[in-house]
Each structure stands twice: as C-alpha cells, then as structure tokens.
Length: 218
Ligand code: 5RP
Image (cartoon, rainbow, N blue to C red; front, top):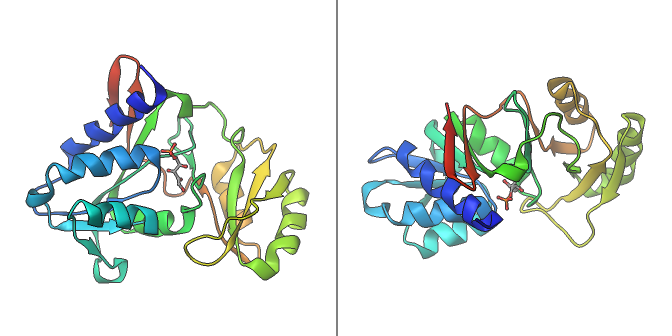
C-alpha cells in the first residue's frame, strides 16, 4: 500500500463517526482531502461543515457541502483532522499545511478530535518534524530569537502567508518531552498567534492507515 492509500483508508474510516443531520468539523491536508471525499458520499445526510482553511472550504463547497461560519456554531460533535506527528499520549504536531490556527479554533469547539494519519506519523517523542509557529509578520525576528532560547532552530517558511495574513516559522531540532509546557511557553510569546503543538487539546480517537487497512484506537 502506498502512503496515499493509507491516508485514504484512514480518511474513509472516519466516516463512521459522522452522525446524521450533524455539522462536521473539518481539518486540512492530504489525509483530510480523502475524508472530504468520503463526506461527499453522505452529503445529503449531513447538515454541513465548519472548515479550518480556505483550501478545505473550496473542496467542501465543490462537493456541494454547506460550509458554516465558525462563529455561528457553538459546538461540534466531531472534528476530523490529520497530523504531522502524533505521540502515544495523542499529543500532536500540526501545521505542515500552515492551517494550524484555524485548526486549533475548530478543534476547540468540538467534543471529539478524530485524528486521521498514515502510520509514518506515529512517533515516541514529538519534534523530528519541524514545529510550525504562526507569527504576526512584525514579530518574526523577535519570536525567532526567543525560539532559539527555547532550544530550537527556527526557519522562516518563505513565500507562505497563512489564511490569516501571517507568517510561519518552522522550528527544527526540538525534542519535545513536555509538550503542554512547550505549548504554553511558545503561545506566551508576544507576536505568536499559535504554535502547532496540540497537547492541551490532543486527539480523542486515532485512526491510522496501515498496510493492513485502518486501525481505530478509541
Ligand atoms: C495542516 C495540518 C495537517 O493536518 C498536517 O500537515 C498533515 O497533513 P497531511 O494529511 O497532508 O499529511 O496540520 O496545517
């Protein structure tokens, strides 16, 4: 099985958590794109979606799925999203697709976070994947210096502007053993919009696409 086939297996397996008549929280990325395709197959049974990015919104709308403004929805049953890394505590690094802030907002209004990944995303310790940090442009250099003090090597993701008009620093060489502390420290820096560590709000269900098919851990 290719990596994309494993992503597809995970994306389609998440469909069993979608309740009839519900509004579904939808993440961003290549694994989520498979989930959106799956959602398209039941579009007449759901009310719609709240989306975490312009890219996902466009794909949802192209399939005829109504997209609701996050401000108009108080609570979602589920939020389905991918991850760049996930550890055994179900803490994640996210933001490889630069959608981390909206992802964190939509995840925050969901009762259940369903993480869909292929098996390459499972790690013991977070940090091999460069940690994305969304930063207000004028704070880029200041935040980069502070991230060096925290032990990382920040690299400006050139040419990328987030859906919110900000920039991304990718922090290399972080060994994140205390993910919640690190999330708090980085989020506390002036100019940081959010860090792509999802430790306080980790995953509740993990669906992993493996060569043998989708493995569900509740
Ligand atoms: C986007 C994300 C994605 O969930 C993450 O990058 C995983 O992407 P993919 O499913 O394409 O591997 O956090 O900001």
